[in-house]
Length: 299
Image 1 (cartoon, rainbow, N blue to C red):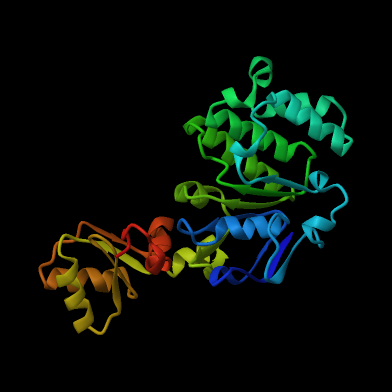
Image 2 (cartoon, rainbow, N blue to C red):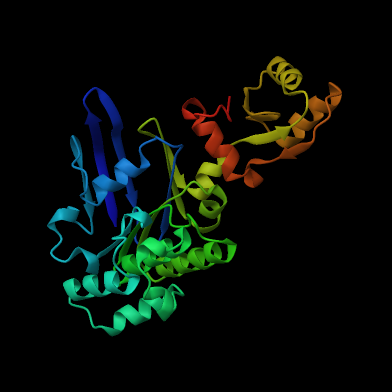
């Protein structure tokens, strides 16, 4: 289990993380979502002891990460696949950690096989690895000590579609065996497929958290039309609250049948009409982080 309790991190006059609290439960995959610069990486660095919090605390398996006697046996971490020593081979990197953790030599071969790095690839220097190979090596390193907790920042970065599918199945299986998996990613579909719980951060603050079903339910009814402004006028006149969440997409707190009838009576063609149960993670994410989007996607 991972418990983040009222964590704040400031740099001078800038607050990167502001009173962040959440729990990642054992046996579940927790997806940690947010736009670029929202505070995801800073939070994960605090959890893994790389950055001290200004206020608050973060505990993994009941302790601060820095207090774990042999952390690799309890927590597997992958924050930056490109941070590995470029002059060493993949095999050397795993062997050094294997020796430091007091693990049998066979564990290295098991992990190389698990992440599909061949003996030839393991013998190359990391500077000659592709991003996808570095990612696989980083995952092998995180799993080396067979930890009960995994903390991964963008683990699918650089992987091809088959690699992403492999990683998804790996994390799902790990959680199903009782492990805690905290996964940060910008690939919303992958989070939607694999995550049990979701934590959304924007501008350094938690804007929503809960089970995937709970958060998707608050997304409301979604409509897509070429006349979103006209549709909003009709909905507002009927006393319904509506929001344009992205170009051509309107969210409204009402039943689809009612919304569809109002649009039909106003002769506004609908391209798409979806109930909350089928609303996607992307729409929910864009709505919750509308004020923090850098590219105006949710304007």
